[in-house]
Image (cartoon, rainbow, N blue to C red; front, side, top):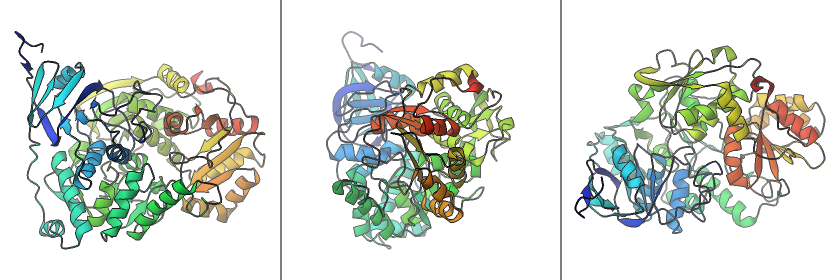
Length: 570
């Protein structure tokens, strides 16, 4: 694609305009990245220590990524970056992408701050990635002598029902009309032909990832927003009832509490958990729901056989206000098929650390497509094992679900005819274990509950400690949902944990905890969560160790985590 005779070369393909706008700047090409936990919303720098661009500023750059990955909260981080002037100048993807696109849509729709979003074919993406600078005009991308024409989005017409149109035209108030405009815009860019009713919603935008989340929620609440389907709430950023006593700075604590309160005023149920599948009224197979929170989406689709896209923050509330979602992606049978088959080695004598490790590797092996995992059924995973598997998978993959042969409900006929194959062996598991265990042996903090711990995990931790207290200088903190906390208190498990010196915190989770609730003196954290082992270093600035729950108990009692592979990997 080099220019001929000094003239600019014209690309064979063309770009599709997802969101309009103009931009120019230096090009930065990247593998997939979760903006939440991966980009500092105050500076625009990459903070994911496992990402090749760690330490690089994205501010003002033309950012090329195949797609995003990880957390649904990336939309809020991008919105905050736009509002504080630290956002990329434009986003260019080669695959479908919803999370960052939604953040850019909110920036333009509600705040009048457009950010161009484009999608290009793979060969054009590769050519643009080699350019040093690029300019995006209304009709073309120009980069390094290459000109790529930009076509309109080309979305099919959306077939709205009379009720949809009435909401869009303001029958139910300004907030619902705004929500429908956002839903229709996202449906168009997803290629949806119509919307679908949902029975329930789980909102993720209640976490105080950035001031933009609060601005959006309070603006919608002031417009009279009220949810029309049962809506649960994700973990928030403070222990709602106790943050003042815990010494949380008032500026942060007040903002985080205001955000939670805004969602409650709009009719959301204050469940404050990132594990909504642990609630008593979990969705059933085939139920059409709308969940945000990446680990919950993967679990609902994969383990329950419910149907939900990985809805970004902000879109989740819009769906709750209307009861309608774009009929696209894994809401449709054809998009729930596995396009990659992963043959997984099952070592003898595995413990609970095996499942998040496999989930982490499965996401890396299948970053852009739904996989079918084979070879695991004899491992007989528990609900908590599957929780850990799905959470770690959702950290490294953009896919909203996976299948596990002989375990999950849709696995039997999941493989698509065109599915390719890959393997996950013991050597890769050992390498991944080392990758997540780069911290030192001395441990000052043990972190359990990412996602929120179940009652069974609380019981297992209490049994492992057996009434013993952590070593001097070591804190043990468990984060749980309110329902789990109440159940643990009723049966005495909470008392046993507290008698061992364990701090059990409701409402917030490890992905939102901050100092001083996060012990300021802790330098190394031990966790049984593959998700937090990945995000923890960037979020907390600490080193992290990863292992089984039994290894976390041992680290709590001794203050050390040996640099030795687990027996099943040795």
